[in-house]
Amino acid sequence: MTSSAAALLVQPAQADQPGRGRFITLEGIEGAGKSTQCDTLAAALRALEVPFLQTREPGGAPMAERIRALLLDPDSRALGATAELLLMFAARAEHLAKTVQPALAAGTWVLCDRFTDASFAYQGGGRGLPQDTIAWLETLVQGELRPDLTLLFDVPAELGLQRAKARSAPDRFEAETLEFFQRARQVYLERARQEPSRFRVLDASLEVEVVAQQVCEVLQTFVSDARIAHP
Ligand code: TMP
Image (cartoon, rainbow, N blue to C red; front, side, top):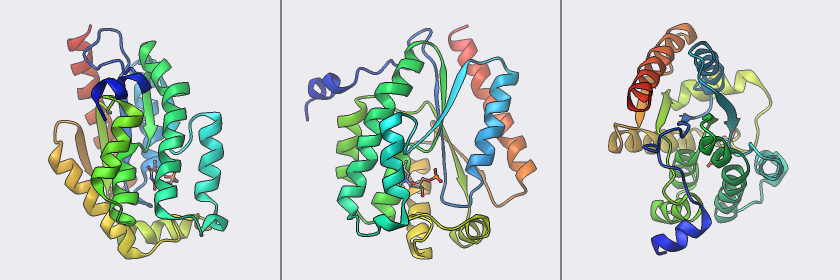
């Protein structure tokens, strides 16, 4: 696809545009404590008086939430990997158009529980779909938009699954095998190695309070740098 074709689909506000909000994503396999730490981040942003909205993927817009329900429903077990990937990106297109892009353009920061790194980890690593197909969809749906900061909550798959199982009845993804999550974790770690300036990897096997403290430190530095770049 040419870059002009991608630009027709989305016209991302760039991070270096003054007044644009920052896009922060949280990633990790099941049981990494990501959702709890998302609330920690939200509280820290509030304390720093940064205007933000908190959202999630799949979901975060009315049609995207309907797609989420389909994707997570254990009764959707017959859904094939390619259809699953396309539904993830269909939900993402809606989420970007209705929620994320308008917020960033208005100067509101966006705190998103999962984004496209999850497609690379779960549909790429977990399901074995080609990474370049996912990268192609990323360009189609997002143009040049990428997160400004990604916190990866890293936990061994055994511990993550153990925690997730203790929590509630498994959804369609939580019912996957240990090997599926081991592959997803490896893809997350590899992506973090490839993009060290965007990723911060946190050891999510530590106590919740210790991880929360590290989250606050990462955020404080990121907010100060953003304020220096665009006071
Ligand atoms: P969560 O909101 O509980 O994290 O559940 C969302 C599930 O969807 C989680 O198991 C990961 C999965 N997922 C993907 O497989 N690919 C994606 O692109 C996204 C955003 C989530």
